[in-house]
Image (cartoon, rainbow, N blue to C red; front, side, top):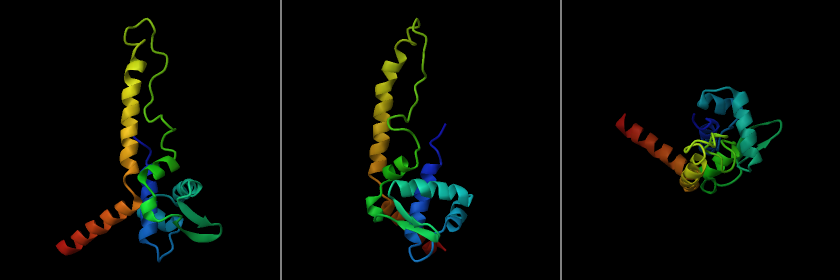
Length: 148
């Protein structure tokens, strides 16, 4: 299992909106970059809007960031697109057999480790902003231009 692609698509949308400030970032335009259906883009944009990360106006094509890109963290995106429920990145199987040595102890043994792993992930995501991703993409393009 992997984390829903809504997370990376949400990042893609926000970065492209920032880089396309002077253009119109419609769902069709964004879908072309993501190489997906505009309906999926609109669904994710709705989640980003609900979280206060983008602004869209009914009947007017395009979106813009609701905050400066250095105020939007990847953790904000992660939470906005409902990748997982709060504190539930890892699911622990329910109802292990209570008469089994492992069954009666597994949940108590692994839950603290899994909670720490989730906190570590969230800490990393909270330290990276959309501005950081924009800057990295721009730098990578500059390197490609110099090589060609």
